[in-house]
Length: 97
Image 1 (cartoon, rainbow, N blue to C red):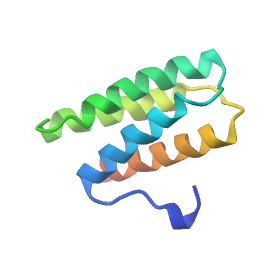
Image 2 (cartoon, one colour):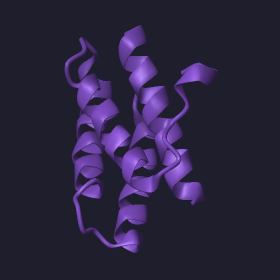
Image 3 (cartoon, rainbow, N blue to C red):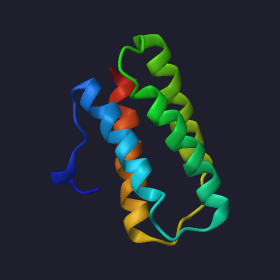
Image 4 (tube, rainbow, N blue to C red):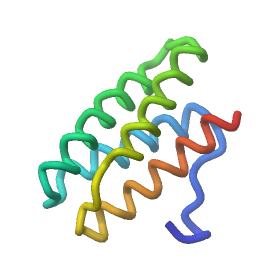
């Protein structure tokens, strides 16, 4: 992720972007070991992006996504890696709010 691709600062936009970036990794050719962590992170991120979720639950979900992303192995795919970096940046925005 370069400086021109900063994550949204608005929490609703950031959590939506987080889920979208992780959904995009599912379309990439990545090894099963990494894909397992990313798939779980995507599911939790989609839950975090659910409308009407209270802020404490959303924060817990985002923290869980960040932990899952930290466990993911290298993908070997530059596009997937860019989406993962963007998702991690969204997590940082959401967890620092």
